[in-house]
Image (cartoon, rainbow, N blue to C red; front, top):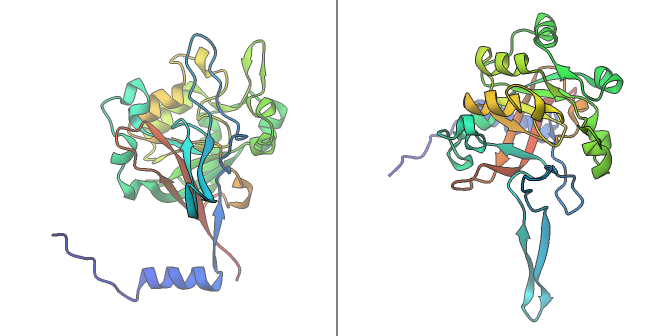
Length: 267
């Protein structure tokens, strides 16, 4: 039998007090999940996941007079979701979403603001030089950190068409350059990468070498991805703490997730 952890009046009590007095704020980075939530659309001949939907089972009526409940129908990789290593061929021998150590789902947030560059070029790709410039000002990316790319893409979240930004050549959304994806996955001790777009790779990344390099390098190196984030503009470049809460689906390659940031305030 596992012995319970002892309680103290130290760090946890101080943290709870900070939540109570407002000196630490909780910011929800999650896109609300509904049938209208933009989702990835793969081209033929690939098969797409089902979109999210609710199926009413009862609503205070004959099937359930005192309660209301629904069945949910959804793919694993819909809305704000986490990619587990086994989602990709390079990580197929790694953890499923239920096996990810809980400790790795909480860590410091590092926010790189690419909003201006993406406004000028929706296909903009994060480079090693971008990260090194950020590190020169804010310090080397911390062990267990979540690197979050602020691109302004959340402003398109009300429209599937605008969010995917697709034309006859493909989907034009920002992401990470091939060299940078490998460098971050192998040279920095990150927990994972978070983005505002529908997937962790750029819209045109299917034509890169390797294809979808963030998936390939991050998931192949036991790192994770989270997508469709919001409210990154409310976070400082450093100093916030990220909490990622996927469903522990046994055998799952990913899961819709609630993603929260804890930020110190002036209260």
